Image (cartoon, rainbow, N blue to C red; front, top):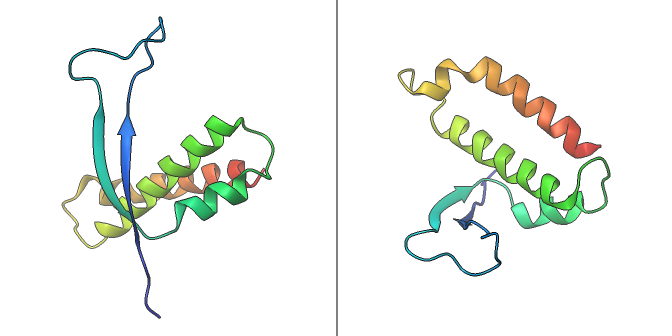
Length: 101
């Protein structure tokens, strides 16, 4: 079975107190190749309760990032995520339970 991946650009931009755009270097961007379609996950999560919309989106993106990173480095015994894999699995399972509501 072939697994398709989606490529995402994640942008983090602070929101200023006065509502104006920040000046200088204030945006962080990164790219990530994900194993799942995050848009479908986010759409499905709209129908779930327990978290606000922003909280659900943050939990889904964080969970998917951690899962993908852990999978990508699972065979590398020197990678920090490999040593944390048992604890990471517990945290990811708990986050997924919250997302399911």
